Length: 310
Image (tube, rainbow, N blue to C red; front, side, top):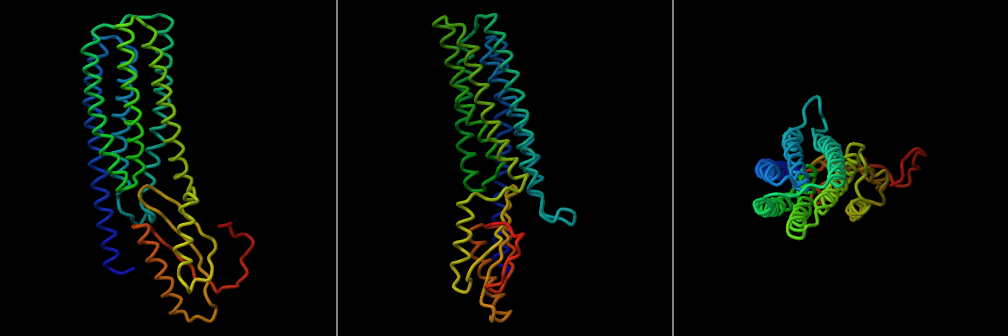
């Protein structure tokens, strides 16, 4: 890889890191505001749906703070003891988030069931509604900004945060509905029932975040579409007759690609090396910042039986 290309990748990673840190700080700041105003609204209204929303925001504060730490670790350059970098700090944080989200959702289920068994009237609904509309506005702004950062960086940590806050939009609207139904229509059970719905949304989000994080920690292959794209890029070179033993994985911002390319057995070593460099450049263009390892094989060489399928 040329020095200019390496510098370009470094600049890209620095820009991505700056965006990720800004998004993480924005999440923490919004979460602090939401927890404060929702706590005040809960103590004024005694709405269990508001309690659910407050707990969700408190969890967002915890997970956003965890994300901030994880992002700082993930962006730490590789060193002598961590040759592959620190990218797995992100999925580790994601797995911890999933566990805490699931536990909080189960706590809310218990609270909601208790309120169904012993209904309680909601008080001061107007201030509570004002709080919820402020929460919805702040959450929309944050979600849009996070989506922008995800499109630019592909960060799992920011994606996890985005999942939380996007689900918060649904839960916040549910709280508004609960307040309206319970206060103006007298349907007291709407409050705990919607709280149960909020718990369900949280559990669903926890499953998604946990699944993605687990796959990264277990070095799961990239999706089939990405592997097919890599194959097409490699085979686009006329001197590459075939490929085998394609292995891929992802850790935070980092993508790792290993592949054996097959070329004419009579090709000189210098020419084969030049072809390998060209393939690497094209892969790096498609996956900036990726770590690419290419092994050169003579075409027609029988592959050992232990090779994994492409």
